[in-house]
Length: 376
Image (cartoon, rainbow, N blue to C red; front, side, top):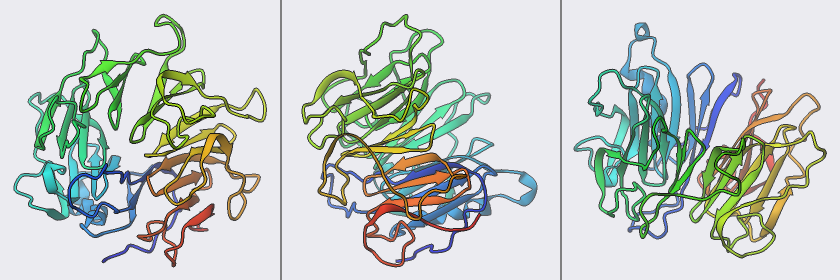
C-alpha cells in the first residue's frame, strides 16, 4: 500500500478534511479507510493516509491541464475511500473507490487510479459548480444558480431521492425551497439553506425543514451545520451552538445520553463574554468546536477512546503547546482522526493513526493533538 509521507506546511491553509468513514455496516467492503486532504490558499493540494484505492492520486490533478490554462483548486471533498477536487473553471476531478457510482465517472469499475474529470452534467452553459461535498460513499455538487446534484451508493437514501438504489451519474435533488432561497451546505442527511433553514431526511423520511429554537423573523439564523451518523450541530450568526438527534455517545453535548427531537442550545464554559464559537464539526459519535481565541472543545466518544464526554470539554493541551503568537484557525473532525491548523500554517493531528493518516512513523493513536510538521 502506497503512503505519501512528505508534506510541508509552508503556505496559508484554506481547508482541512479528514475522511468520514462511518458506513453503518453497508456492504462487504473494508471501510476502515482513512485519509486527509489539505487545500492551500494558493489552490494547491496535499493528501496523505490510506491509499488502498489510489485515492491519494488526486494530488496529481494538475496533470490534466497545461501551465497556460491557469487552473487552480477552489474546493476539495473526501469520502471514505474516494477523493474529489473542484477547479476554478468548474471541473470536478475524482479518483479512488468507484463502486456504486460514487465518483460519477462512467464505466469506471471498482477503482479509478488516476485523476479523472467527471463528465459535464449541467444543462445551463451559464451555470457553474462552486462547491463539492462527500459523505462516506456519496458525492454532491452545488452550482452558482443554487442547484444540488448527488450521486453514489445511496444505501439509506443519503442522496435524498426517496429510494435506496445507487446512482452512477450526477442527479438533480429537489428541496422544498422558498423563492430566492438556495442550498449552501450539505452534510450527511442534512442541508443548510441561504436563509438559515435546516433540512433533514432519512431512509424513512422525505426532505423536511426542522424547527429551530428562535422565531423565523428573529435576527438570529444558522450559518453553518455539521453532522455525524445520527446527530446534527448548527452554529448561528450570534455564535450559539445547537444540537439535535441521537445521543448514545454524548455527541449532543447536552449533559446526558438522551436524544433530542428538536434543536437545543449547547452550553460552553468560555473564558469570558468576549470568547465565542466560530467553527463546528462532527463525526459519527464525536463533536468539536473552535472559538475565536483558538481554543478547541470536544464532546462525545471518539473512535480511538473509551472516554465519553457529555458536555463540551476543553482540549487542555497540544504537543508542543501553542505559542503566544499561534492560534488555531481551522479544524476537521473525522471518524477516526481530526486535524487542526494554525495562523502559523502548522497542522496538529489527533486520533487514530491506523493507516498513518496522521503522518506519524508509528500506528499508535495520537493524544494529545500533536504537531504534524514544524515548517513555517
